[in-house]
Image (cartoon, rainbow, N blue to C red; front, top):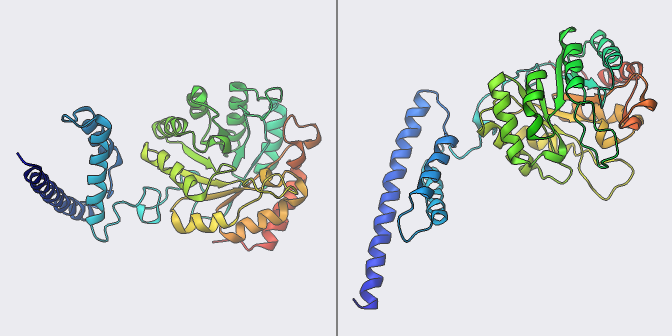
Length: 355
């Protein structure tokens, strides 16, 4: 067979492939219409992954598994692009992806919330004192660290499971929700068994295996997940990380802005309040702003908290300790319960309560 004949045969096969893809796109359009009529989610990411895995495992010769997966991914994307106006390629956490589930009293249409508590749970007496003071102020979310990832391996690393149980008991006996961080896959089940909101810390914002593990554990137990933005993470990367959580089956997701690393040395991090506005436009998820970590100092918390609420945050997180100067971690940014009461009163006066 001559070279010219071979080229014509290739062209014929190419047109057959395109016709097959077009037939698939028409089927996808029909599926989209059926899903819309039945009020079903427009995209099934798990099914897509099953199809990609099957293509990779059953790749016909001479295609490699990697090549077969890439071709199948391109076909899926082309068909989704052909579904005019359906938004099927929108992410699960996007504005068009459905209603955000306010599992812990935080979200659009609800009164703004405060999340407060010590950086680290140091003792029963400490967490009880803070929890009692916060509950008396109407704060419904108690945070506290049990596993503490620190820059130096010689710094206080937290008290582990004992601290988790103390935090959970202190919150539960006062009708509060508890919030604590899972720092690695090895502690996910312990955290998920103990608290209402599993925090993904800034260092782990793009630790995708951890995101999946936390999402699966949270979904199985009806927990929520709070995803902190990494100090070098773009807003798009942050939201994509939330998509990993949603894709693994967890509906109850909170986004938490906590400052990014810039050239400015006057604060620990630069609080990026534009991220609140952008995330509000791009996603349906409740948004929390941690003001303690970007400030790194307690004298800036009032204006930062007021600005966060004014920008549209659903909740603000502040670190509270009975005696901050003696705290085992982040002492400079924590405030006493009395100082927090004054802070809350001033912020409430500056920014009217959203109803």
